[in-house]
Image 1 (cartoon, rainbow, N blue to C red):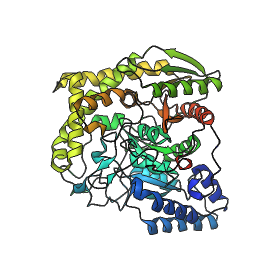
Image 2: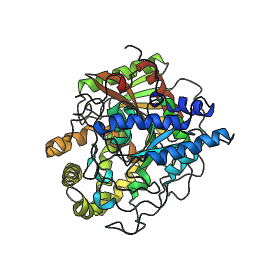
Image 3: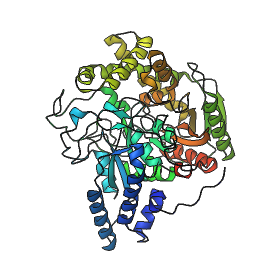
Length: 491
């Protein structure tokens, strides 16, 4: 594959490069923000990745960042670098709409902890990234902001729920994006759009948010969130390179005891003395991979072997198989109580998609699982966490597909129950990981028929550096070019 041309415009440069250049006064934050705003104006009307972009607010923040550089102030690692914030994340002065018109009228009174961390690192929020209604589809369309397209192919999903974050990032609108993940919502969009997605260990990045506005329909001002939100959901970065993802992850790492799963300090994890073993899990026996997915996995294996990793092929993995099955129990039962709200204020698409989700879960657990089944599911989860940690330790990684299929055709989950069940089954690599709370990264591996295909790397708890090192080894050898070298939003 030919080496792509070197970036020339600021919007094409990496976050790491921009942060260093701003710090060295080689470029101003205002120049970077203006370049990104110009890029947004050029491509966002086609892709619809970002909503509620406020140019003057961003430029004012950039000018303050430049004043801090001129004054010789202490600068954070992302000083002056733009980042998008997802529409389901509290950002002061912006409605946490979740893509639902009824939730779009009450600006947040404060920032979520992850947004505070990004601001403290010097990042400049630039636009709200689109997502599906209630952030609960592997597609990114809603009645408030419309449909987000994949810059590689508008007929394919950009992923969900952080689809706007990934699409905007891939098209050069911002060099970094914030997302969140409870069922693949960082990792899958990153893979669909050919960028890097990091799902950190639960507790590494604070999930704390300020109370929602008292006027929010269907709930109190400070709702009690279900167990899966505390035990399975994470905030994390999306980036165009592994180095940028690593930088953003470090900036977002916020030990915060307001978060019920937050840890007071991140443990220091020494690098292994010997070679790291990568155990390859191609399938858990529930679905056959598309040939393109197998080709991408083969390429990732070759890249890791070339980098000196020891490769071990496994014939399935019962821990991941059980975890994927448990996801369909625990997540489904935790969202059951909000179904009246979805039917009250959600659109037809999210009602249909959730109906298909419940149909797929019922095939595994029955129409209405008992309280005993739910409790036993949580008990089994704890056992699986222990088993996987014992297997991985600090010197072993898992390599899996991202999904058994390439990026889905748009709205595939709405075409019928049978297709929705196929998607549900194909996404086992995305759903198994959140139940267990382990860190995982998706990294682009190859282009296949014009679409980026990625692989997923999973490590032991708090072994993000080990996972990112392996992702870096794949990235360096894969050399998948940015989408703008192929033409943004073709067709």
